[in-house]
Amino acid sequence: DLRAPAHILAKIQDAKELKDGTQLDLPKLQLLSIPKQSLGLKRMRVLNLRANKLSMLPTELCETLLELEFINLAENKISYLPENISSLSRLRTLLLHSNQISELPDGIGRLPLLSELRLEDNQLVRLPDTFGRLTSVKVLILRNNALVELPMSMIGMRGLESLDVSGNPMDYEALPDSLHRLNEMYALLHSKDKRKKVIKRAVTVRRSVRNAVRDELKQGLPKKDGGKDGG
Image 1 (tube, rainbow, N blue to C red):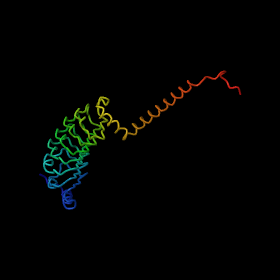
Image 2 (tube, one colour):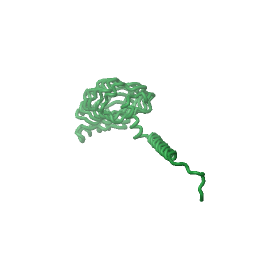
Image 3 (cartoon, rainbow, N blue to C red):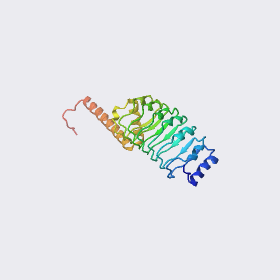
Image 4 (tube, helix red, strand yellow):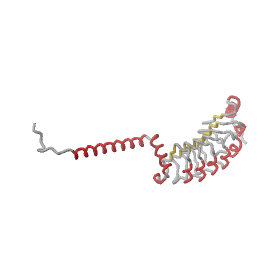
């Protein structure tokens, strides 16, 4: 077990002393693995490891840091998540975007308090059926993966308020109505092109309605005799 560099050990010590061991920030440090010393912060609630070179989330972390509520592992090289991620039962936010994840363990569906899950810009080809058990998730971002379909169990995700599955090779029209509406709403809120199309369509509809009403009124008016003004 290689000892972590001094400057990283210093950050872990600072977290222990200055933040009561509840928050550890180690972003952009070229880390290849999560320092073992960080597992000593048993009261940790916030863990930020964004933009390193991590390839996995170790099982030891999931067994040890049971108070975690927020994990940021975005912009790493993670391809593996352990089945016992389900042990992190207090987890509310899990940021995993911009990694190399192609599949998720069933255990990810056993996080009862999870409210935000970001998995965009990965290599996901399928989602586990347990996904539908994530009934507390409000924000789910799956943009730019390789998903051809979503598990039907996701209809059970009653808490969903924001869903983005754009940039996947799936038939969006085949999505269940509730999921299709959420995906369309997300695109409308976050895509300028989508907003422009909707506005253009609305303007076109208004114009066609206005024209139809005008034509209807014209048809209802008596025609003038002579066709020319007398003046």
